[in-house]
Every structure is written in structure tokens, then in C-alpha cells.
Image 1: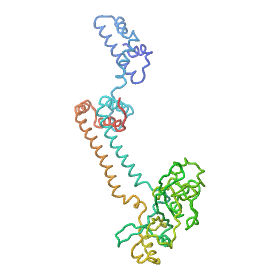
Image 2: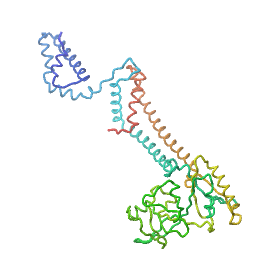
Image 3: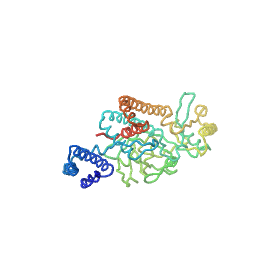
Image 4: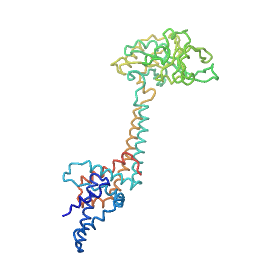
Length: 421
């Protein structure tokens, strides 16, 4: 009895076959030689003559190599062996599943592109909506311990006004409230900046000297206002915003000490605000407020307070109302006409964001749900079209677990958004 497999290996020594491919090629060629040998013997040839005729099939090694190259895809993807241990998954089986999955992508590019497009659209819409939600509502304000900051104002029930501003006298008297660690006040207006190539309107703020410290910020360059500069008749000094400094002065540190003209009044630049100083109203220039508590200018100020640790907003409202009622009334019916208003800092500038946030979150969920429903509908249609294929797989011995494993492998590239070619 001839060892056909050994004869084939000797003839294919230069082909460089490896692993499972070599075993399968050798087994098939050995069976072919054995059949050719038996056919020659059946025709009456001698044993030696039949052996020589069978071996002539392997005489042209170059031709054999070309034939094997043509059949290479068939050798590379042998069908996986169905294991009796259905609970396990071999690496070979998993790799085969992924090969079949990518082949499926190439064979059905339209379906795959449609699924990837729907998921990409849903994910992009979710990312855009979440970016808006995060930028406006979820991201904390760029200040120290922003949860303790509150907005201060006054309400006039008799006039049905929710915001009337704060008077000079109240801005001084309210500082006696024990619920607050500190308070700062400001007003904003537009001024004309001159002295450069052309005049321009800029947003300016007059602030008390302690506003920057209340927000927990430090100047990016130079220093802040001193208490003496914040008194009536104090030195005409100013701080410029970080964006204004970069835009107008190109970030030149020599801006300190320079004089700028605001509505034809000279001010000396003593510092540059940090980029986080977006309050109040993203003003380009800050000046000391220099308010006179004995001068009645009406209600025109706005305020920011920082609560003491452990103090709630309701407690702060009650304490500030108590102080407000005890203040000497220099204006007729002042205490009865207005009362302090304390609100969470974010709500004054963004409003009550909860309804808006709920709408945006609902929109995110709906968009993602629509994308998932559309993809699920496509998968159901494709599954119905492959019913015959699944029936054939089951008939030749594939288990339900094996079929599910193959389907999962086919859908992984689509969910990952891999390109098809």
C-alpha cells in the first residue's frame, strides 16, 4: 500500500503550505492520486506503470502552484467544524465568523451603508443636542464654588415689577446680612473708546472692588481694584478683559500703565481680567463703581452674593429681608415699596433651565429611538429575506447558538461604522 500523502508532501516541498491549508491540500491530492492509481490498475496496467501515470499529475510543479493560487480563497476559508460543546467558542470559529461578516458587507453594500448612515445620523444629532445642553446647563460656571453664588435684586410688588435694581443705600446696608460671606455690586453701560485709529463702542462695567475676589478669580495680568480706588473721587483706573487685551493690544504686557479714553475721560490700565471673567455682560472694560451711599440715584445696581457654607437660599432670603426692614428709611415708604430678591445665580442669566433641559433630553431620546427603530426594521426585513439560508444552515447541523453567533459577528462591523469595499 502506497503512502500517497507522503508522496504529495515530497512533491509540494517548495510550495510553502502551512497549517490547516497544507493538511487539506495534501489530503485532497492524495485522494486524487489514489483514485488515478486504482483507475489505471482497473484498465490492466501494472503496479509500477499505474504509479508512474499517477505521479505524472504532479510532475509540473509550477503549473500545480498556479492552480493552488487560483483556488487560494477557497483554501483560506474552510468551513468551521461544529463542536459538540455548544457552550464554547473557539478562536478559529470567531475569526471565520468575522471573515464571513466582511464578505457579507462587500456583497450587500447598499444595506450596510443604509444602516451605518441611520446610526451616524442619530449619533450626530445626539452629540449636537448634548453639546448644547452641556454648554449651557450642565457645565458648571467658571467660578470658585459656583453653587454658593446667588443673584441679588429687588422686587416691587406694588408696581408689579419682578426686577427693579438695587439702590445705593441697600447695596451698603445689605452687607450686614449674616447669611452671606460677601456681596458685590455693579452696573453696565456702553461707552466710546477713543485714542486709537478710530473710535469704537465697547461694553463697560462699573463694579465694586471686591467682585473679582467674590467670584474666586485672579487678574491674568497686573492687579485688581483697591478699596481706596472704589471710593467717591478715587483714582481713574480700569481693567480690560482678556479678549479685549488679545484683540486690541495683541497680548502685549506693556499695556499696564497705558491710558485709555472712555467717553473722553482718561483711565489708567492697571490689570487684565482672566478669560473666565464673563460676568457682568462680557464687558470689555471694568471701572470702579465708586458709589456714594448717601446719594439717592434710584434703583439701578445689580448684585452678586456668596452664601456662607451650609446656608440655603430660603435662609438667605429671610435673613436679607430682616436686614432690609431694619434699615433706616431715607426714602418715603422705601421698605414697603421694595423687598430683596435672591435667586440661584444661573437662573438669572439662563432662566429656569429645567423645562428647556427636559425638552432637549426628550429630543435626544426620541432621535436615538427613531434611529434604532429604523435599523431594527431594516434588520427584520433582511432577516425575513434570509429565512431560507437559516433553514439550510439548521438542516446541515448548525445549532441556534451557532447561528446567533454568526449574526452577531455580521452586525459588529456595521455598528462600528467600518467602511465597505
